[in-house]
Image 1 (cartoon, rainbow, N blue to C red):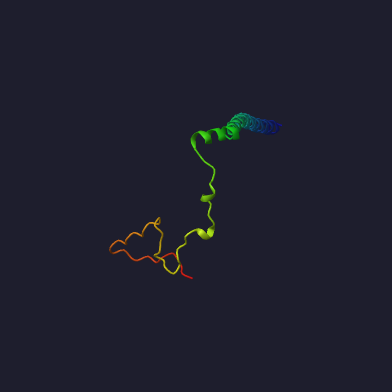
Image 2 (image 1 turned 90 degrees about the horizontal axis):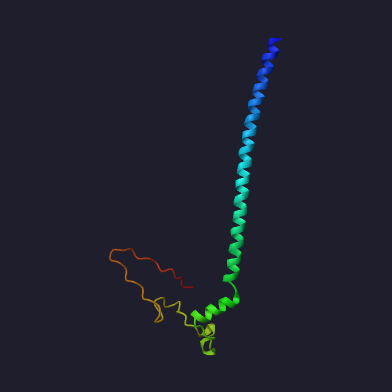
Length: 122
């Protein structure tokens, strides 16, 4: 009979300790959940503010007003439009040929190995 009481008391104490541990863990999880929910609400509020700022900054009338004030753009004149055929292209047979706007190739450093050209000739 004494053994039954001792075993029952031992099981009762083990179960009690287990319940306290589970209760503490659940409370910690509830605290973390509340913190996460508060952070989510805060982030959603910040997103709403950012969307409002974005829509204000991208307002077409505001952008037009700023462009007129700072960019000083003018419509494209017909003389500024050219076809692709009018563009100067380098002759692939003459890799050294270049226009006036293209910079010259720098001279190789003394003692440096020569590097093959990246341009391939068909």
